[in-house]
Length: 326
Image (tube, rainbow, N blue to C red; front, side, top):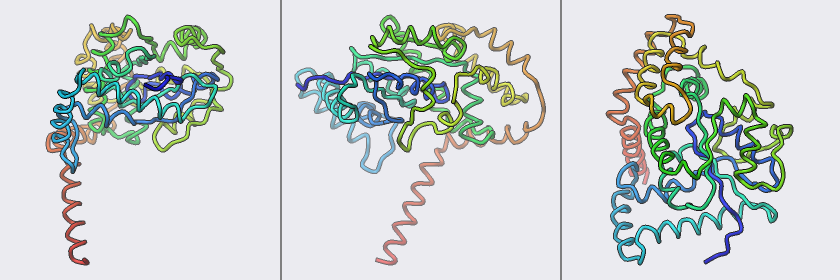
C-alpha cells in the first residue's frame, strides 16, 4: 500500500454551474493543485456499468469479464475500487507539487459516476455545487450551441447527471460540502470561510488573485476563464434573455417540474418561485419555429442515436477506401 501524500477534492456539478470559477478560486491556495478537467476516472468506473458505453472492443464483454474478476477477489468490487483509488492517487501525486496536499479534480461528467466516486474515495473531500437550473440551461445553449435550441445534445447531463447527482448527495449529504453558485457570487467571503473550514486549509483563499490562475488542458471551460476576471452577480438573471420565447419557457417549465419541488428544495431552490420567475421573464415569438424543429429533431436524434450510426457509416467508408488502395 502506497503512502497517501495527496488527498483528492472533487467538485460535483452540472456543466455551466460555475465550477470553473470555483476551481480557480480554490487554486489560489498553496495547498491545492489542479489541472483543467481530467475526465480520467470515467472509463475506470464505467467498467462497472453494464450499459452506457459504445466501443469497438465490446464494452459488455469488459463488464462481464470484470464481474468475473471481482468474484475472484477477496472483497469483490471493493478490491477493484481500492485499486482504482491507488492508481488515481499516484497520478494526482505526479501532477502535484511537493508542498501541495490536495489535488482538485473538476470534471462535470463525473455526475454520471458520482455514487461510484463516493464509494472509491469515501474519506476524501467532495464539494456539491448547485445552480439555478434555468441559468444552467440558458448557459448551455449560449455557450455550447451558439444560442440555438440544441439542448438535446446535453440531455445526459440535464437528466441523467442531475438525477444521479441528487440521489448521491441525498445519501452522503451529512458529511459533504454543498454550495449554491448564487451564494458564491452574492457573498463570496462567507462562502470561502466555509470552504476553508471544510478543507482545513492552512492559508486563505484569495479573491483578488483567482483571475490569474491558468488551467492547462484541452478540456475545460475557456469561456469561463476569459469571462470571470472578478466576482459578479450579472450572470444571475442572464437566463432571461436566452429563455425568451413560449417554446423555450414551455420546455423549461417541464424540466423544472421533472426535477420536482422536493428535489429543488434539496438543492436550495423553490419550484413555485422559479416558475413565477419564468412566467415574469420577457416574452417574444422570435425563434419559436426553429426551436420547435430543433426539439423535434432532438427526439429523433436521441431515439435513433444518429451519432453512432454516423460513426458506423464513416467506419465502413474508411475501411472500403483502405481496401481499395491496399
